[in-house]
Image (cartoon, rainbow, N blue to C red):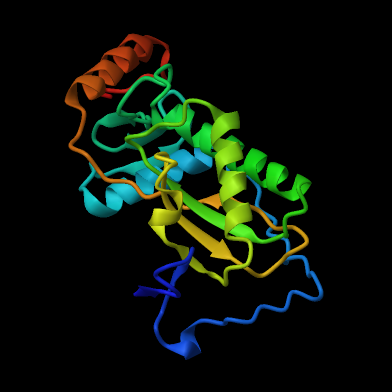
Length: 223
């Protein structure tokens, strides 16, 4: 990979001319085909995760029933109740937690695009990866920095933006600019994650909480 000009603001693009369009002509703005997606129910999500689990791990023999309290019951020689639970690294009250940061990322991008368009910006799209080690503290200030960045790279072709261009914004790890314009253009996160070791203490806490609620669950031989 190389930059268009090492002495100027540049996007990272392939050396081959056939792989990167230099001249963009967004003469007619066309909306994307709408993606009609309904939010799955909690039971559908729980069923999805359980099916993933049983595809990798052996479960007791029996008829599987998807229900509530517990989420899954296996009726065999013994009746086994199974609960599906989310396990996060930290509590949602922590400002640096993924639960908080994913909301702030979405708000930052939405606000940044609004600020950029309000100054006459094009209906291009940005895809952004944020640094977990620099969690978003102030949505408004980061949104303004991102909008300013979009203005500085306004005439670049589609491609990955050279990190040196936004090195003064520590929250940003990766920025890709799609120079094609759309009526319904949207800036979006393309977050990358690393998978840490299982947080055993938090897992024990979830088990303790579920054990307290088991008295109100459907009767099973074991949970």
